[in-house]
Image (tube, rainbow, N blue to C red):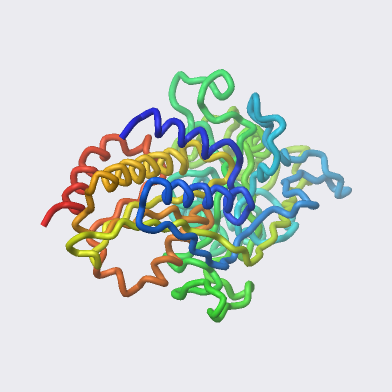
Length: 411
C-alpha cells in the first residue's frame, strides 16, 4: 500500500459534491466499479435500490426569520454558506438542511433547550416550569444524535426545532475559524438527517429491501419521519436569535455555550422585542430516488462461502474530504493492493467483499438495504470493517489490519 495512492484517490473523489441520489454520485460509483475491475477483483457490480430521500426545494429556500407585530420579517438567517476560496464556480452544492424534516411555516415564541436531551426537557418542564408546547425550540448540536433531539422536541410539544453548532462544542482551543484556521466558521451549518430509524433502513420498506417488487408504505406512514419542521443554522445566526431571548436565566454553566449571549431560556424575547416571534420556513421534498452500492468480490480459495467484508459509504453532503472519502480512499488502495497480490497468484482463504455504500448520510440506507437482501449470509460473515473517517481511527488501524490479514489467511 502506498500513501501517495491514497492521496491521489482522495483528491480524485472529492473534486465535486456527490450527494446520494445525484448524477455525480452515480458517476463516482461507476468510477469506483471501473477501477475495481481494473485492479483485478473477480467481480464489481452496481446494485441499486429505490429509497426515500429528502432534498431542499429548489425554488423555495429554507430559512428562519424574526417577525414583528405586523408580520414583517425583520431578520432572516442565511440561505447558503459562502463557498471556500477556489470553489466559487462549483455548482450543485446543496444548501444547509436537515433531511426528512417536515414541511411547514410554524410561528411562535422561542425556547432554548440546551442539547434537547431527555434530561434537558425534564429540567425545563419539571424543575423550571417551562412548557414547550406550541413553542419553537432552539438546540445546539452534540451529546446525542440529531434525530433524537427532534423526537424529544416533538414529545415535549414543540412545533419546530432549530439546530446550530455552538463553538463550545465544535472549537479546538487556540485555533482560528476558517479561513484563518480550521475551526468551524460562523456561517457554516451542519447538514444531517433527522430520522429515528433504529436500523430500519428505507423508511418506506422497513425490514425489506427497497426493490421494484417490494410493497411500500405511504410517505405519511414512513418509519421515523419527523412531524415537525427542523432546520440547521450557523452560530452567527444563532447568536442573533439567542441574544433576544428573555425569560429565565440558564440553570447552570452546563447550559452555556461559547457565544457572546446570556443563554437565557425564554420563552420569547425580552423587553421591547417581546412582541416579536420566530417563524420557520422549511420546504424540503421527500421523494423515492435510486441509489447505487458498488459491491466487489475476491473469491476465497478454501472457504468461498465465508465472508470478510470491507466497506464504507461513498455519498457525502458536499465534497466529503474527511467524511467519508478519507475512508473511501483507503478502501480503494486496499482493493488495489489485493488485486496486485492476485496478479501474482495469491488468493485469500475466505471470500472478501468490498462495499461502497450509498445514502449513508440519509440513515445508513445503502448498507442496510444490502443486509436486508443478504439476510441469509449474516451467519457466514466472520469479520467486517466499516469505516468512513480514517483520520479518527488511526490508532485502531494497526489492530484492524492485523485481524483482517488473519481472517483472510488464517484458520
